[in-house]
Length: 191
Image 1 (cartoon, rainbow, N blue to C red):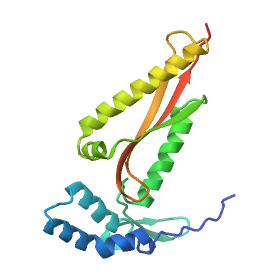
Image 2 (image 1 turned 180 degrees about the vertical axis):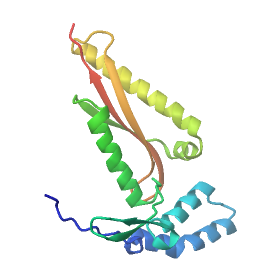
Image 3 (image 1 turned 90 degrees about the horizontal axis):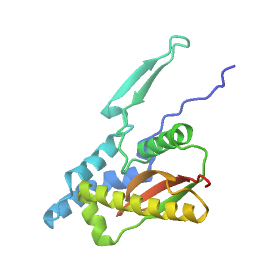
Image 4 (image 1 turned 90 degrees about the vertical axis):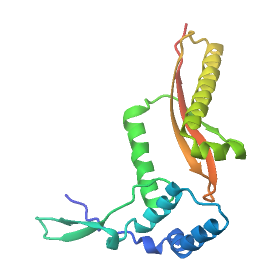
């Protein structure tokens, strides 16, 4: 038996963040240019694509159901992860489901978060290689701590660890705040 669920398309123009961005983006960009403090191209692009996300005027897909005869227009999405809460939320839910169903076994998992000094956050925001190095040091340090602790509980020397880490670039106020969220697991084998 089919469950009757009515599709209700989202209206991005009703989102308060959309209103703020559409109302102030051009002014913000112009003021930054006047101050010789240009906004990086990838940041401007992220905001501009956010303003087009889910808006039929910027492109759509027409779908048709042969069974019921209904036609529907599905607006294109930006598929960005920075500003767009709709695309970011969808990606987050899909990733979480994938990790739970296919990646992380049913074993204890602990979250570790690495927050960084302000000066380093700005450097990391523009230097992917530096982010990779910081992530490697962070992971190596947490693994060493877990292996040491496993030894205290009688595990063999070659205890195994695993991790999934997410790089977050913004704080809750949409401020630049690059930080790392890592899910770490370990397996203890008794001697």
